[in-house]
Length: 425
Image 1 (tube, rainbow, N blue to C red):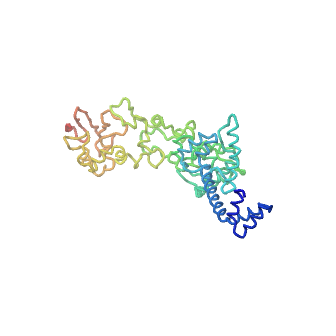
Image 2 (spheres, one colour):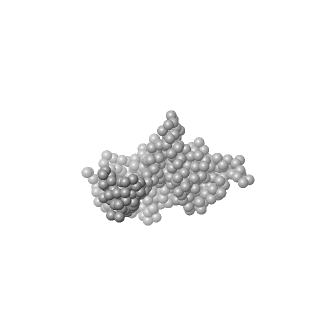
Image 3 (cartoon, helix red, strand yellow):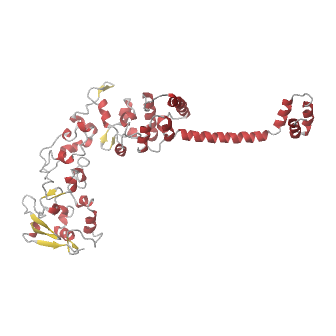
């Protein structure tokens, strides 16, 4: 008897042993094997269950791995897209969350198209970088509203009065305006701003394009600025009571089209402001405020952000000054009474005494009693005026810097020369 037949006889039930013996005499062996196999159905069921779990686990792992951007970049010619995604606000959001139609069929469509793209990736000599087709733009735009459902109802944001709903109703898609700024920004700086690409506005708002019989207004016409920028009325108020303002200028005198979407040149602020404002020459001055000397007017001035022109309040205030001069803020506000600045007589800081002399009327802007915010003919930005007189009639003070202190005369000191000497360290 062969080993196989012996094994069959051993595994068979007692009532089947006769059939095993018969099989050896010519009965079809397949039937006997099947009957023996049925005896151990539970073992096959367990094996099938374990195999199923393993297949499902492997499938889920493949499912998650193949939808990650790190996987996509392995085959798609999209290294630049991947790099821009990494520093975008959408970092952490998977490719398929935006680039696949929601639901099982959309996922299968992406995976099946991926097979074709994989073959192309392997066999083609050269492949262009991946880009959005028109149909795919619709998919991406629809997916935007899965995470941003309330944005459609927003009309005014960041000082802009732009109706999302109106643009969507006219057939524009989210990516029409927002492509290149959010999921795949052109630079890290643009990623921080998180704004739409406003240059796209000109594609429709040229004064000639029509939608449903209506002509889109010309965005380059200065008369239309307030259609989207309601706060552009501040341009009419710019300058306020500043006597140095030569004339009030229209929007385009500061917002040049050559700089993009009418933005102000960030590297040429002082020259731009100097077109209207009589500004002191920082080079010829004995001292100049560093932001002013560097041409960074916006360190103190919020030109259009508020109804006033300074970072805090309608005019320069101590709060604005102390936002940079934090050590002096600690001294004046007695948060650090043991600290002394360079303006001290012995170990007593003189800022505190001057603050008390100036009094409550100038409490919010007493820094200006002695200092000018731009440039001065004297050291330390000194420009002394008696606080209860206007600059036009007040006698100017004179400050002289010495090796270990300085002297002041005129203005508040009415002709007497006051001297201070710092304590040696």
